[in-house]
Each structure stands twice: as structure tokens, then as C-alpha cells.
Length: 486
Ligand code: PHE
Image (cartoon, rainbow, N blue to C red; front, top):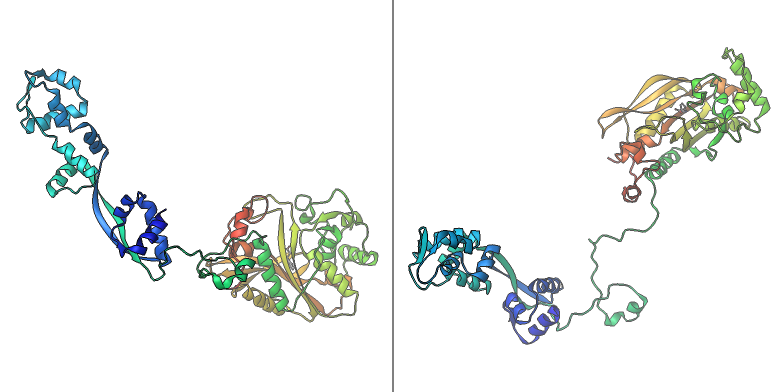
């Protein structure tokens, strides 16, 4: 083995002058020897100095002539010693390329008389080319003229050979010590006799065979932290199935509203209707839809209980907000800040920006005397914590809020304004039937979780983020979420 040979040799000798020679003498492959040299050097068993030599190797054509003779000599030998041979016959006897090259060179050397008939001019020739090629093959050096002549005929090419001279290094030992690499029980018990391998702090860790959080979950965690830092409590969102009543009616959304169509909403077949609703509150909701009250004229239509009973997959988390506000109204009034982040469902055609199920982030503040200014202020606070401090608002319409505002944020990374959410002040037609005090105002906003996640993780097709086409490797590799850090 190369390692034993090197270390053993250095035990009794000053140095190894030339790794090439050493390999030849010890019948070792030089490339393998070089690998061992590099490893021994890294552990400072040995010190080395480079030896670079220009060497020659034969080309394929060169190898052929080294074996069969140069074309000029092959041609010469094909011409009879006495008399002559016709050029056509000579051509037939020889390889086409040998004939072509050989006739020119043999004529130039004046070895043969070329014509229709070919005859010898001398009786004996030396195959210098073949001899030089054989010498090269054996590793002998060529003089400059020979080197140049073979090179111009493309019979040899020069190559750089790299080897080493080797001597003992500071850690030299006749045998390589095995380093202990692991902190096993055995290694710890015998640590005094062992030599531990040094730590490589630049080495990459083993990839963990563990579960990995989906980007949506990472962003959700960050958002939850932001809400909690702002004093918000999380609402329970563990009911994907909701009745139309809480999803729409309680929110003063009229029963003929297009969003309540099966083209936009997934209705449940079984159980198709809800079992119970708070009857006195249902009655007040019916009243406010049909004929108003609390200063409103209502929608003036026949409100149908069957419509309100229909079960659906909630189309927004505002359904949860309506349940929470109703529960709040039943107790002596206390101001609240609530948030939720969970899944909602819409019967939509799926494309690169839309899914039939996605996640909503919702925040609301319920207190006496809140104004639009409070809403704008809290939105600035919330979005600047997400890294968006420039906001713009556009008047919008929601059945349950008045006024309503679409929220646009200037995305520094993308260099443009992007729509980030929807907001408003809940209408009295929604809050007063619940029984909240008259001067109580609820300001609220909703944002999709997918949009900020796609921006943060630079994903431009929502199907790469969520659903069956997601690449699991991407989930394993993607970075931790750092909201608001540029
Ligand atoms: N529910 C609205 C939506 O689905 C968002 C919203 C929440 C708007 C709260 C106003 C107030 O887009």
C-alpha cells in the first residue's frame, strides 16, 4: 500500500526525491500515490515540494507507427530490393494513408525512385521515426530537433506531469495514528490514550431527517407573534363547516347576494343544514334584513330561515369573528382585540394566483368610540411590523362594513404597490342585533396568508406553495421566515 511504502521509506531515508520514480520502483500507481500524499500532507505527516515535468506522450497515430514502423519505411520495404514495382501495385499493397504519406517522405529522403515504376535507390534505411517514438514511449527525453519534428507530424503531444519530492513533516510517524472522531462511550472511557480529530467548524452539518415546516406555517407563526406583541388574542377557528347564518346573515349579507351562490360557495350535502341557531338573535337578524331598525331601513325582502340554515365551507374567517362578537355581546362589555389565521374555501377556478382553499389572516378591535383614524393607525402599526410601512387606502364595499377600505402596501423589494387586504368598520346592522352597546365600534381587516408568503419566499405560482403539486424538497430546503427584515 502506498501509505505504508511512503511512511516506511521515510523512516530510514532522508527523503523521496521523486514520487514518479518512487511509484515506478515500488510498483504503485502514481495517481493513487498522489492521493495518499495529499492526505498525509494534510495531517502534516509529510512535507512536499512540487515537481513539474514536461513529458511527451504518443498520439494514436504515433502509437501505430511505433508498432508498425513509419509510413516511409513501410513503403520502402514494399519496394523490391532488385528491379521495380508498378505504382498501382505498390498502392494496393499498402494502407491508403501509409501510401500517401510514405511516397512523399521516401522520395524526399531519396530512398526510392518514383514514377510509373518504383525502384529502390539505396539498399538499407534506418527507421529513425519509429526509434524516436519507442524512446518516447519508454520515457526518455528527446532532443529539441527530434521533439519538433515529431510534434509537427502530430505523432507526439506534450503533457505536464506533476509529482512531488517528499520528506518528513512535523507529525511524522511510521504509521498513521487513527484519530477518534466520535464521542462514544468507549472513546470517552479511554480518552487519555486517544487522539481526537480536530473540529472542523466549517463542515456542513448532516441534513436532518426530520419534519419540516411548510412556508405558510412559518409565516403564520411570525404573524401570530406580531398579533400577540400587539395584544391580540387568538380566536378559535377549528370549524371549517359553518352555517350560512354565521357566515353571511349575521354579517348583514343579503340572501340574494351573488357570493351566496353555489358558483362562489361550497355548500354541504350532508349534513346540509345546521341543527341549532340562537333563536332570539336569529329573529333580530331577520328583522334587520327585512325592515331594518337601529337607524337602518334594511334590505326590504323576505328573509328565509332555510337559506340561513344551509351548511357551507366557510368563505371567510369573518364568520368566526361574527360568532366571537355575538359571544362577547352576551357578557358585560369589555374591549377586545382578536385575531385568527386559518383556512377558508371558495368555489373558484384554480389558476396561478387563485386556489379553492386558502388562508385568511383577520384582526379586529372592539371598543367604545373607535374611528376610521384608529383603523388606519392600527393598520400602519400592523403592516410596518411586516416590513411594509407605506400604505394607501381605497374606498371599497363590503356588506358588513361601512366605511370599507382596500389596503395597498408599497413593496420595497418588488418596487410597486400591491393589494394586501381589505378592511372596514362593522356596520351597526351587524353589531346592534348582537346586543353590543350602541357606542361600541369594531374595526377589522382581512389579509390572505398566501400573498405575503409568496412575496417573502419569491414564489410566483400559488400551486407551487399549496396543494398536491408542491415539491417536498422545496419545503425541506426553504429558509426560516424573517418578516420585516430586508
Ligand atoms: N372578510 C373579508 C374578505 O373575505 C375581509 C374583511 C375582514 C374585510 C374584516 C373587512 C373586515 O375579504
